[in-house]
Amino acid sequence: MPALAKIKLGLRSVIMKLIAQPKPLTFVGEGSSLKLCQTIAQLDARKAIIVTDKILVELGLIEPISQALEAAGVDNVIYSGVTPDPVWPVVEEGLAQLRAEQCDTVIGIGGGSSMDAAKVIALAAANSQTNPRELTGLRKGKQAPLPTFLIPTTAGTGSEVTIAAVVSDPDTHEKNLIGDTRIIPKATALDPALMVGMPAGVTAATGMDALTHAIEAYIGEWPSEETDMLAKAAVKLIFDNLHTAVENGSDMAAREAMALASYYAGMAFSKAMVGYVHAIAHQLGGKYGIPHGLANAVVLPEVLEYSKDAASHRLAELAIHTGLGEHYEGDGALGRKLIDRVKELNQQVGIPTGFEQIQTADIPAMASAALTEAHGAYPVPEYLDQAECEAMIARLQLK
Image (cartoon, rainbow, N blue to C red; front, side, top):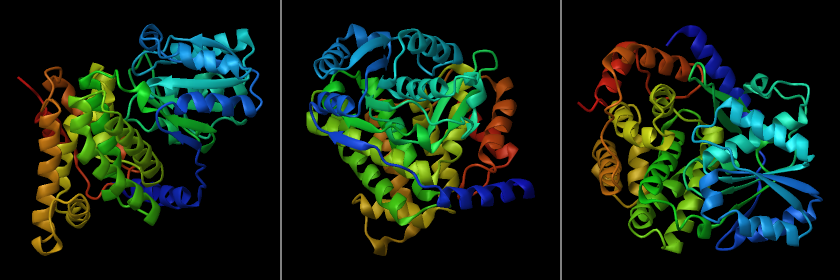
């Protein structure tokens, strides 16, 4: 890695340790989303915009929350234009509706796309003189966002508790990161009742997304006692519950466990950061529109294989914590068990081993972009070079 990237990474490490990361008031359990509506009213919300997608509206998941808000005295309107991997026009359209309706509160309901869009809309609304696209980067808004509340309907991104939001540029297909501790919501609800209808494929991909967050946070170079505790808890919850949630989507206990796992993993990686899995997955998503959770799930085993020696002790600790082995077996053997368990879980929940979309001609540029994203930003345990990254992406090709 270039010396300048090492310096940048060191500075980021210091900054991340100094930044206080607020935690939202959190409601957990069946019906918790309706309890959150009472809190929103108690915090003086007058009129809220619900940021979501058309599918959730059609499934009838939004109406009970809208009615609960009305009953608590909070007028509300629905913006349902969010798309997977939201683009800037989605943010601009939602922002225009917020301003036209004179809303003072933003509620994001859905997966990571809806929650990320809600966070950026709230930030842009408070910074009325700023083009929303100018918020890309770290703490670019001068003013704190409008009061924001988030209700996840998938268990994966952890966006309900993270300092980041991602919006795609429809012209360049690049994913733009908006990072600011102030976009963490004031409160969130982890309501498994909203997740029982999630399709098995989405459950699988989002669950493996959360697992990626937890593992990358744990094996990276910026751990803390708190992030280690959260990451370990998330990994165990996912190993114990994801297969059940995929096979039996109505299992409320498994759904709640996965919601907690996503939440814990989100808190962990907000401080400890992620690594090459995300850097490569972002390129696959930007280039081919592959859903982020699915991309993470497919890339994770490859990155773990590459990192198995440098991160052997940390992988061994996760193996012991999740009941895969004992100390006396040694780091190498335990790390192998952890990686094999990840591969086994991918297979159990129907995750493919690669993607047909990957074109050989695209690989050099994607590898270069992934390394540019990771180096100087992600505290990875061992560094990839261009040739190694290209070879890794090539192994993900399905012919």
